[in-house]
Length: 312
Ligand code: TXA
Ligand code: MG
Image (cartoon, rainbow, N blue to C red; front, side, top):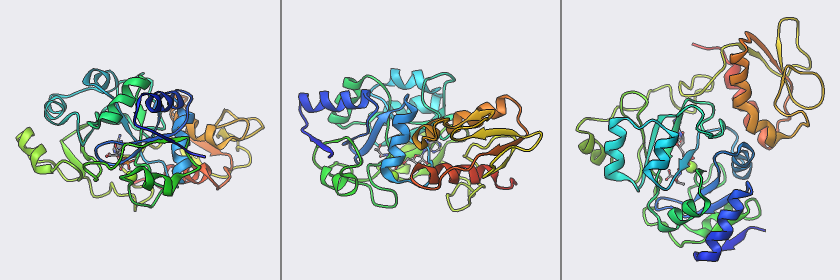
């Protein structure tokens, strides 16, 4: 049963305690309800994908209460500081270079060296972030393929019984997701949203570029923004061939394992860290054990297929 928490001190304390335990908690922001989890806890983040039934790992937005906490996680460029000064707290997400060793689970950014970050304006979101005292990863709190929720009732209609709690803050005032601006290179409009692009361009004094054409989820294996290891991958391998590095799942010998116990949540939490570790050891031919194709296994297999697809 999903707890429905009132927007008062006990409700906030309960929501913060659940986040600290690694549970998934929906909470209101000024844009839409987010499905939050501790961004430093890979298993908690994997639980977000499990609850949403998301068949792939999209990078998630990290929510923080202040500019100081943001600055500890990402490198704020002059453009970022300018946009932040005008539009934060608010319906703007900035994608910025992540600070190495910032403690954020690799699953949050799908292994990318960047991080999407936002300071929400909703008083309950801010109170929850302060009470929890850590970064909260949160996509919209809807099952995969459904529209974003703007009331607690919407959240429950999609996720009742699949998440620990929803903090009921009534209807979201903006009702549209945040605008996403990429600032890892030329300032780019990655998603239109609650703040008009014109307002951002006026603040920057320059136009925003359109996202690269190959950056759409309809072209598997072509996603420029998705991390793939250097080596080639052979999937569904029961055992490695000579010269292959074996990425295991479940019991048995392996060079590296996603989950020795065969736990899909643990495997999801470890996936991107394992891909990076394969690069670090210089693996050129990688064999990957079969992963069951249900629950989080579907998202893991989707990511592995993209990593294994022929590269341009
Ligand atoms: O208003 C919102 O943005 C809501 C509330 C809860 O904050 N959140 C939301 O999250 O809409 P979600 O997961 O539905 O959308 C997040 C988007 C994804 O399309 C993802 O591709 C992009 O943010 N994103 C996040 N981190 C990124 C990164 N490092 N690089 C590129 N895109 C990123
Ligand atoms: Mg969404």
